[in-house]
Length: 341
Image (cartoon, rainbow, N blue to C red):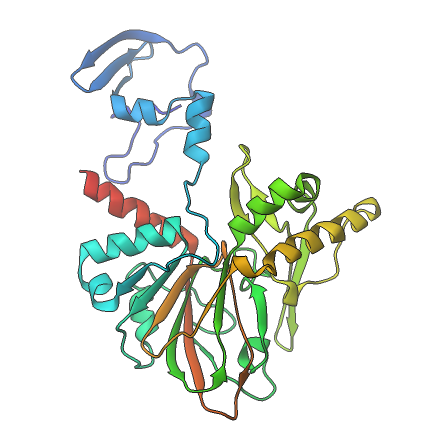
């Protein structure tokens, strides 16, 4: 229960000073009256609440309202997308630039930032415009360059198929930023794809197999000298109203599955069907990321990859960083909340 009563809410933190389970099941309304845009209620246990009418509408328990609230209202896309592009200085120094960046990251999931310095560490300045970075086994800032004996194939010149990063973590990073410092090598196109669009297509074309990948988990793992990470999660996550809210797809880090034997064949059929959609040309955006550009994207929605490149033909150096989705959504909501006051 949300009393919104001065006796029940801590004045500075906004936290409840009671456990809702302790409220009597026999509590009832003693009086109720509307004053302008608020509803004032007195309860029979000597508590008093004031509810803005807009708050009551936003939290209405009707099925229609609950379904609408859980719809993320995203713009899915294919390779015809004109990538939202913003100048670095505008994003860093103006509320309008920040708002547009946050909005496009939320709805489209992919935004290019131009006019950046090629100084190492610039990507962290941009990340901190949202929140503190996420540190992982690869550090806070990671350098994507071709090196011998790499701990990850991203640090080679090999092509990378569409994937998401670090799905073997219980909470994979939400936002990823890749800053191009050097791009002289032949090849090395950056590729991006809307995994939510892929999942929507699969739901239409193969509803039974779509149901399998929302129910039967994949295993993702990463093993090394100093780490051992393994986790099971479904390729597609849907909420109670059927809206797609997450995708987990990274075949390069697929481990041994652990599912009932009667599910195994359907599982592999479903994975193959999803993979086939990701290989359709109309699904993939590809371009050369230029020095001084940072591509920012939602790692829980957008698949990324690259074509192979010739490491002997010139340098290719990207710097990357992560920010958790919780921090992004917090920034997005509080920014818009301030705007509406």
